[in-house]
Image (cartoon, rainbow, N blue to C red; front, side, top):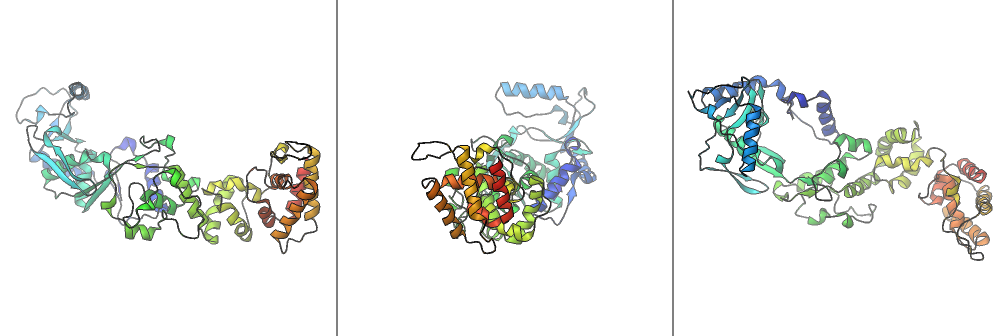
Amino acid sequence: MRIEDTDLERSKPEFEEDIKDSLEWLGLEWDEFYKQSSRLDVYKKYLQKLLDEGKAFWCYHTVEELKKENEEQMKRKEAPRHVCEYKIKNKKLKVKNKEGIIRLTVNENSTRVIHFDDIIRGTIEWRENLIGDLSLAKDLEKPLYNFAVVIDDHETKISHVIRGEDHISNTPKQILIQEALGIKPLKYAHLPLILGPDRAKLSKRHGAESVREYKEAGYLSEAMINFMALLGWRPTENPKSQFLNSKQIPNSKFKNSKPEEIHFIDELVSLFDLKNVQKSAAVFDLKKLNWMNGYYIHQLPAEQFRAAIGPFIIKEIGVNEVKDDYLDKIQHLMTERMEKLSDVKNFDYFFKDPEYDRGLLNWPAYAKASAGKQKMISEEIRKSLALVAEALAPVSWDIFDKDYIRKKLDDLAKENFNGDRGAIYWPLRAALTGREASPDPVDILEVLPKETVLKRIEKAINK
């Protein structure tokens, strides 16, 4: 693990800790760790070597001069590069800028084509005379990115450099630095960029966040790994495992068989091959991630679910203690409808009495056949709730018979509301949950204590 912190203005301890914590959460470990800021003496040694051998030189052009040069090249539609006259030995030039930078000498008249074999993209070529004299360091104590990583890769015996395609333009520069130092070339693989659903570069407006923010929102690390693995790659054994758009997301995440898109970490390790990474940009679809995360949540064993959901019950609902056996009873009712662990806030009624406006108790689709009514009046709502309370009062919760309870509620609808089951079930649902959407009211009755059920119905009647 290498922390590239030579740019001190952009490097802060909290950023480093966030990187470490995120990798550990994803199960990615390292056997070696260092920061570039602790290796400045190493870079200095290599910089001095290039200077002594005449392969590098001090450039004293000002920032303003370089900016003007770049603007003029852009106007002429030329590739921006800096060919520096300071590299000519013994040429007497007036130094306007005492704070020079160190550059690598590159032959601007070369007809050579630099090429490297990218594992993903095949042969990539770059004309040397389009590069210009490369900046290596601000001074002997301040190496720049392209130089520092070449030294690090060499000294830590890196074999493969795997990075985003936006680094392709850095590769020929690093190859020139390697050649100047007599360093053996590496193997490169440039991954496709990640785009939002609108095919624009991924950004915050697409839902892109740091790994830590996904963790805090209630995504599981296993789901994140599975989802990210399919961004720009698919196993050749099962090419369907990367669904292409949101419309192709499976309708349910609760099938008995494991969906084709789900790959546990051991499977990913055995299936993965860099050669199967696609060249075109991958699309980050939050709907896919949510579906996938919901699948992993639904598959959690009871003990793991309790450990995972506990902190979110505290954070989202404000309840500090819930008994294990109660969580086990309500787990399936929540996970069938959860995409993130933070969605537990939508099930607050399992942990405390709901707060809601009395208008929620009105069955919106009510249509009494004899009167053609579109809404229930208050007397009918009170009657519905009172009938339910009266029917449930003598029922024992010790052996809860859902079929028996459902029949009693259906009979109430037939006898009092012309068979309109909603006139019974809707006010009951609202009284128990305070929400328009929830699991089946009978399923909720089964897990809530009887005294809680009757208390909530009485509260609804009073509303």
